[in-house]
Image (tube, rainbow, N blue to C red):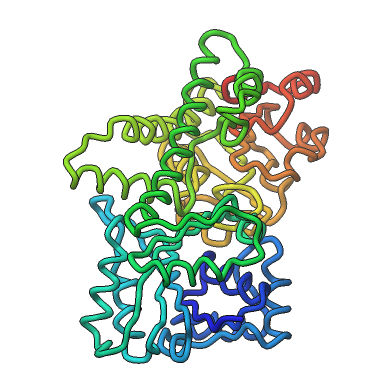
Length: 431
């Protein structure tokens, strides 16, 4: 059992802390939000993440998981301290390290000799070196503290599973002994452990997310082409996916990628490339396709109602950036809604997660608490997030409530032939 501190109790920090406690480590998790810490100490998890409430409750009950206010309180006497703080995107696309640097300054005076500080948040190449420098400038004295990069590869909605069943564990550090100690934290997990230099570890995370973003943009471009040549992208993706060099993952067309990682990380990698003097046209092209995909979805809705959204009443199912999460950050659904509102439509929306902040992000949107209430009198139903409850909805009731039987399914959630047999005018993506 190791003594671990985790700075930050968001998606990454909370999942990391709860899972490490589950694996037998003694974990103290810190955040600056006192109300959040009070809730967590009661076992109340403020984010929607499968399996996380159970792990938090079990960790508290076992005494292996505690929550405190402030980074220093979670760092004193710890063998390892994870930095899981926000690294938001700057105006120029770069990642903002100010939160990580502030945390490093706060914890430097209390760190024990031999502590390893671990960058868990996604941070650009060179961040390990930068955090080491900040620590040394902030009063380490003769104490020996090492910094390592240990990027997370967690998908929202399946973060607990991803942590406990990883494809790989990556550790980057200039000190081989410190890197081995970090890797040993994951003993018991059946996954390859890659120990490398910090710059390569940092690049692995960005390269992985950028590749997935490119893959999504590629299948969206193929879907758009399928529409013009009368092919079905579902069949195309199936035929591609059986090739083990390609695989089935991330070959599902839709309204574009979003969330807290892909938009931010692709921008940060493009910024890194620009600073290095490399014109990363491939990645820029993927971002351009993604940006165009939002408007393409709006155009689909407009075409479904005759070409103009002015005065059209739109019902939206799905507001979160993906199913099984309540995260609205850079949600394609919100982007599409904003554009429909700007085109003169009135929009009512529903999401199973509640999506309380959606109205703030898309002024003019009316969020309702029942999926059928949003349909009453609407001219078209637009499905923007792939929740299973939309797949199994009562479409006889849907037809009765809609003013016109029109569906624009940006997630290809429904069967086109089945919908058309029921009398719906149905439009998918690339079908």
